[in-house]
Amino acid sequence: MYLDHIVQTDRVPFQKSTPPASIYADAMTTETLHRELMAGYGDMQAGRVHDAAAFFEAFRQTHA
Image (cartoon, rainbow, N blue to C red):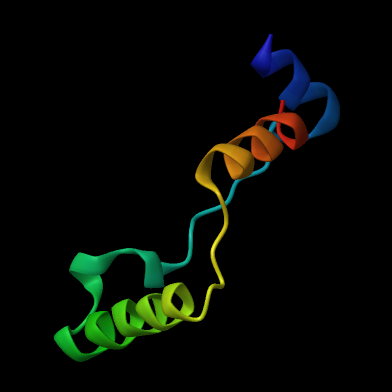
């Protein structure tokens, strides 16, 4: 089925993508990781947060 689609359209039936490298903590320097964690902590203290249950429900609706 996938091969037929690739042959007929000359492309794979899904989008190929890789996440940005900045989300991999083990690839960050100690300073970069600390800076990113502190930025997230600052967002939390300033109230720039979202309810996880509401986020995942919206994500499921848009990516289902």
